[in-house]
Length: 287
Image 1 (tube, one colour):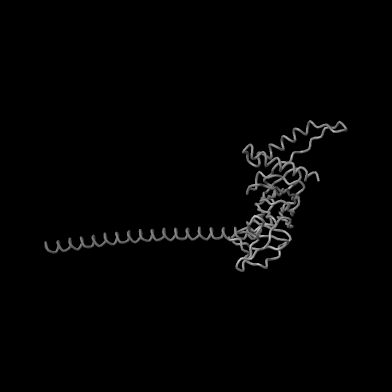
Image 2 (cartoon, helix red, strand yellow):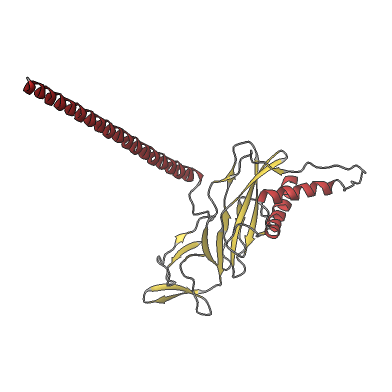
């Protein structure tokens, strides 16, 4: 419990400090933690014993939490619909992963507002008000007195007012009281997701059952790793091909140089043979 409380306080301070000071993420965290540790020296307990808790510092040698599915995507939900976001992360160095969710009014995973009590991999979104909100989470690897963090992507949630389906030439639009309708999105209504095109029409009027939680649209860590390995293999193959081409070009250049040298030698030999023949003929003529 104490570690979670530290994380909530820490991550809130980090975002505000980064926006105001322009410092790097690590500088802000370490500066904040160092200041907190100094202030702790002045706290006197009821038993008149002063204790200084060890400051928790960013340690790059620890694993950064890796998200199983990065929190990236967007959805439009009708006001009052149930919606959960999920993004789990893991480490392999024996540390404990904790979470803190944030909301933002811009599409950014920095400078957001800490969501009190939102410290689980799954977050239940408040859809009571019609508005657009961007959500992200900070996962922290806590290992003794050291930590390392990673920030998720951003998930955009637009809460749409209650409306009704209206048919136009066999097509359906979800229209609210002022006559407007959502476009180019996925619309979640009471557990059913509808794909909405650029003109606001549902491309599948029957809809699809929504998952219990909305997860990121990016590939999971294993797929991302496979993609990276493929890119590395392609880069290595390209480098090998370029090296092979360079080697062949050098060999061809050497062969051409050798052939030219041979031709020059043969030409010189022919000239010497011709000169010798001419000298011999001249000698014979003199006799």
